[in-house]
Amino acid sequence: MSSKTKDAIVSAFLTLVEQDEFDRITVTDLVEMCDISRQTFYYHFDDIDQMLCYAFDSETKRIYTENTADSWTNYTDTYIAFFEKYDTLMRKSLHSTSFVLINNLITKSFADCLFNYFSAKRGEQFANAKTTDFLIKLLSGALASLIVAEIQKEKSDYQKLFGQISTAINGYTL
Image 1: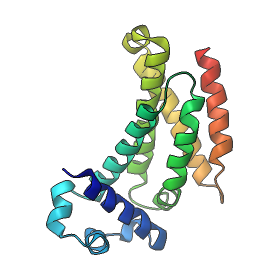
Image 2: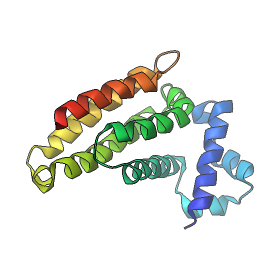
Image 3: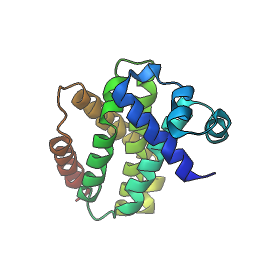
């Protein structure tokens, strides 16, 4: 499957969400904006929710493959750019039927990156520990809650939030 086409569909969704309510955007809107057939959309995605999962998963993989585990600070700039890019989508999802999906995607993104980071930092011992899943769920849920609180504000300050997150995580891994 062409990631170029998938990325164009995601980009169209981000543009449309700037102009309309989250729940009002349809596959028809996306195919018209991308100048593709419905069949092309459905070749790549089952629905808009699956398209959003692809978008968040792609961003998350980029975050943990582009950054080293030297320090969580390395992840900070990439996460700030990610949340700034998806800021309107996340804000509008607060009042949509897809809020739970978006919240779960944010949580999963943090869980994947935290697991990757801590495994690299603490080694196989961490990855195989009985408490690892619990710790990752706890931290990723807490970080997602902080993001939700941040997007509920009139203007988000991702720089400040991720500075605080980085300080806390780096302090834990010393």
